[in-house]
Length: 302
Image (cartoon, rainbow, N blue to C red; front, side, top):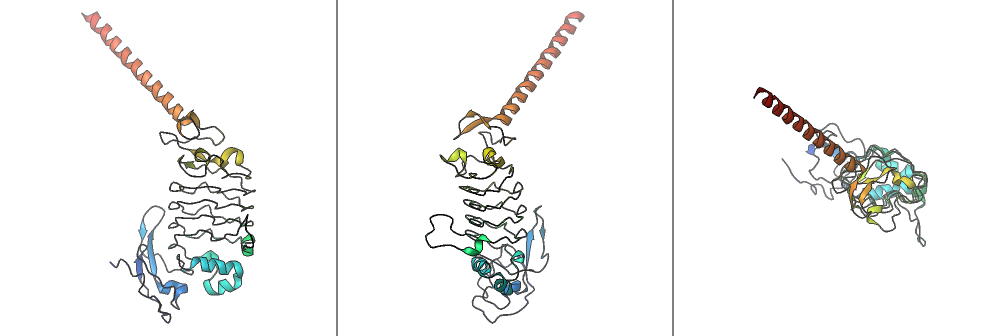
């Protein structure tokens, strides 16, 4: 029933053991300074699957264990010299990222008004990191900004905890993956998320709250989809109306009653209202007909 052993091996630089421990995924433990850090010192982690069922210690960590303290250092090393980084951390596709909460600027290089700053390794980055566990990540701000070659299959990422996706794919010119399966219910800002992602042409099908920052309902000059191939349809993104319902078709204009700042009624809501009115009218008609028949029958017997 241990709840927190995060600092148990802090600065134990000589520690090199296979612990074989089984920990719940909410128990903190850092082994970053130990010799056995690359295998998480044999610690197993139990965590829930997509259906919410917890499996006890499904297997040993197969890649280098990452957390907020080391993932940016490892990513920078990979961008500078992938071969050398692999010798230290293993291949980037195998990194264990389940404990990472911050992926801000992970593969970022400046794209405008940069002065002398740039990260040339970002422009050629195109590794397959689709197997990364991002279920604990809360910010992906500028994660791939300037990664002009990146087009990795990341459509199966579990993004339900992410709150900030601003500039995430800004100037990721080659990116064009299906992200319709992403859970974006917690996202609060998407400012410039696909700005200048020139090859992006997807129907996202996202249903977002109109309060999300940087998008048409909540920005005077939104640039979230500017320069994409799906700009005219907002790449399939629609917004909830006052009843929490979204437009089904990305090409239709969802707001029928209200304005771009606050939509009260959109087309699916109107359809539902019409159906309910028709059903109510039909029910009233049937009721009246039934009463009329009863009245007629009673009058005849009398």
